Structures are given as C-alpha cells and as structure tokens.
Length: 81
View 1 (tube, one colour):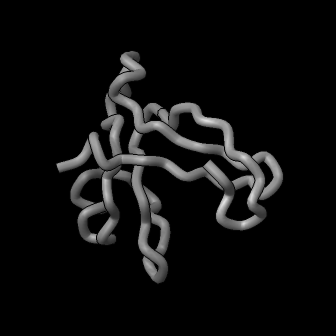
View 2 (tube, rainbow, N blue to C red):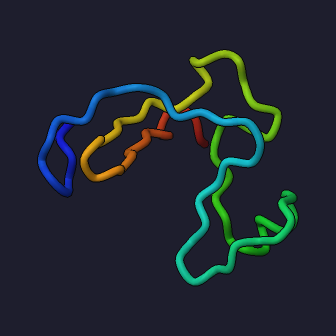
C-alpha cells in the first residue's frame, strides 16, 4: 500500500494491543478513566482486540505503517459488525 501523505510504500503488519483500543472523535476530551460506559459517553469507537487482548494474531487487524510520516492505516472491516 502507498502512503496517502508521501507516496512511499507502507509495509504490512498487524495492529494489536492490550487494554482498551479505541478511536476518539475530534472534539472529545481524552477520558481520565477508561470504562465501557465512559467511552460510550465520549462517542468513542471500541476497536478489536478487546480489553482482555488476544494472543491470536488472527484476531488483530491488518495494518500498514509509513516510517517516514509515522502514519498507520488499519483495516477493521473483517473484525467489526
């Protein structure tokens, strides 16, 4: 995949984590505490893997990383309903 900012090739990998993984919309303040209720109130989008994490990398989204721009693009299409 080519980086949308600089046009360089972005190597493919996975994006994973342990703990809450979420997208916080612009305009929302970052919560001091993390819970399902608080993140819902902040209109956050919860992203896989869930708060318990996953050792199975098939449960993590594929992602592309641009070393130059420090940008990640992740594909959650097969992981979210």
